Length: 471
Ligand code: SF4
Picture 1 (cartoon, protein in one colour):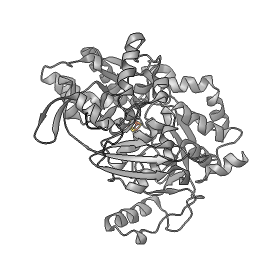
Picture 2 (cartoon, helix red, strand yellow):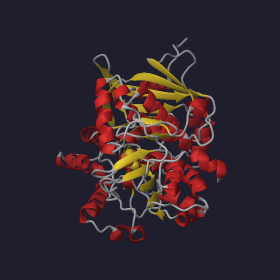
Picture 3 (cartoon, rainbow, N blue to C red):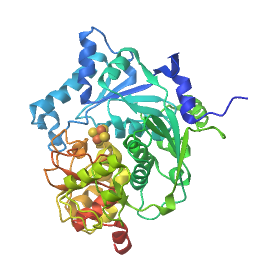
Picture 4 (spheres, rainbow, N blue to C red):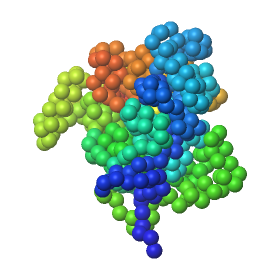
């Protein structure tokens, strides 16, 4: 009888072409996703006189640099010549190499980690790469998905293979049902706060337990998305009927007999009973609360009912120094309650929380209320935007005072100009609150879409459950 294996081991072993040394393997890459930032790899490839080895396995999406305003004019609406050049270069590289391209005018355009699942490109059992660290998102389908650098991208474009060190494994179990107002974003912020930004370094996380199983695909995508914030190489959730139901009928999902065959493989992927992980962590989902970050690292997060911690009470000297610096940057004093911290702006979007379920959750809080600070929403994809408009969510956002913008990475990393001005405090659904992430001097508080909506209508960090109860 074969030894029990984890889901990661099953996928890893299926993709090893050859090994070297004790711990390195040349992996076959099934899907490779590229965005505007890929120009360097394409440029080097061209200089070497090479072409993309397997163009049908790479997909190009314009997301990082696309403006979220003026999009009704397509490329003509892009006023910054440098940004326009980036978008055009991606299209040209895709065309030269025969790669499918979902550009600024395509109804399938959107953030690469939102579009991949939406189109059915992301499937269980696949190896998936992209030059963006939040590629871990796709692991929500039971895929092995990880971010790569420019030279690795060039290697994949040229060979469809990649040398990788075999990561260790960590299982994180979240049991019990989540309480009202507690979302996937709160779960992952609680996990990162518990294990730290280096808590899963060099590891692949498999998420399991009743709270994870009960999540929709959107929720699982949010969890896997932020695995990288705990240092993980990848995050995964075992595929199940929720996964298969989501995938059925999508543009790139298998059909007919191919679907049945794929389903057979997909059902064999979950971790075998008795398979061992290098490490295990457990959380009780029933005890989790809406979370909010107070510092400049995703691990500097606390339940919304808590206080800004005192760095002097942190034993780890490095973390203490980091927390002191974070509080100075965030202009916060130890001991003050998190609720009531004034915010200047509110932002909903990104590959973490720009999906339809996220917009529905925020709209449920906004309905019949008005924002008191400038706020904008950038749906994770054009398809999400259209779906939200069909459901009338855009009207709710607009009536509440939110700007309803087009899809793109927007204020996640502010590469498209959607930046937060210096000194301003932004309630944000994005994934990173590093110094300057949303713009030079910008102060970011990470939270769920419903919590951002609550902050936008009150002007301060607010426990969304108080609005849900009386709304
Ligand atoms: S939204 Fe942010 S994390 Fe996601 S792909 Fe864009 S820049 Fe990367």
